[in-house]
Length: 448
Image (cartoon, rainbow, N blue to C red):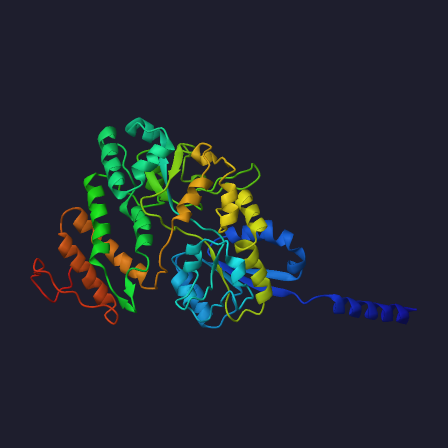
């Protein structure tokens, strides 16, 4: 009897083992827990059969150093099935041969047609092969204080405020009026770096021409003159974004700040998470509900989440289904848009939601989807190279001296071009020294 029981046990266990599927370990890399939250809340419950025997290994890094850490792992041949990247990381990820194309994952071009064109541009390499697929569109907008607009500018309607912010000329004039009518108590912006988000996107792809850094004097001068005029209008408070003083300035002292949907998400339902800058413990929330939103003088991209996979992933079918759901599947993306207040990367979903008048409590009940849709629809730019961010930073470093009158425009542009040449001598030309530039020691690099 004991032998029979033992025999049946062995047979039974063997059958069970034959029926069980092998557990698959899926490695996903990100710099925060947002994607994990959406996977666990939305994807896994709706794809139970696909994920039944999948164990996810989450690798979370700090945003500082994240890009280089991913590249190091990819170049070492490490197994990363899925990883995220924002818009600034795109040139490094799309240009890496160890990153799979969407076609290699089995995702066809026809599945991507509802994505915003600029998100596809940012996810595409120099050979026209799309490797990254964006979950969100993240068009940049301005959030402005509606109470300050009424008190100091006499404006109560969003449309009128939009006109006052729609061009650089009117933006600068509005800053000057705000300073005068508030007695200098309210500044237009916290700092000039926030302004840079808008201008930098417009410059995307302009520094490189046929493999050479062709730095445009006109492009540099455009940015420098905008900051100089705003500095003359006393438009900047002079605090760093997202530090304690910046959060205090949101409550009192700053008229507007550059933002994007990920920065001002606000729950559409009582049960969904509210994840905004106003949920930070650093912020008192006094200004919550006092903002309205407007397009910026230049359309721009700020943030976003592109999904990529390494070329050596052993689980391409699972990865492809995740990417399809978050970046191609209209019904799934609509679910995320409403449940997590994401501005998803799907023109059909956003066109529908822009007509639904979805109230955002951060914006005193205003519907932000229609503003995002307008901002996203106007974005067209070239894909940046890996050099663009570095060159733009060199320009940003030259801005202060010109803005406060310590250097002429000619000198500032020369210093900028000189530093670009010194940093990238193999692909940049040495600039001709202007007549006004006569350093006492010609061996001393100017204004580095």
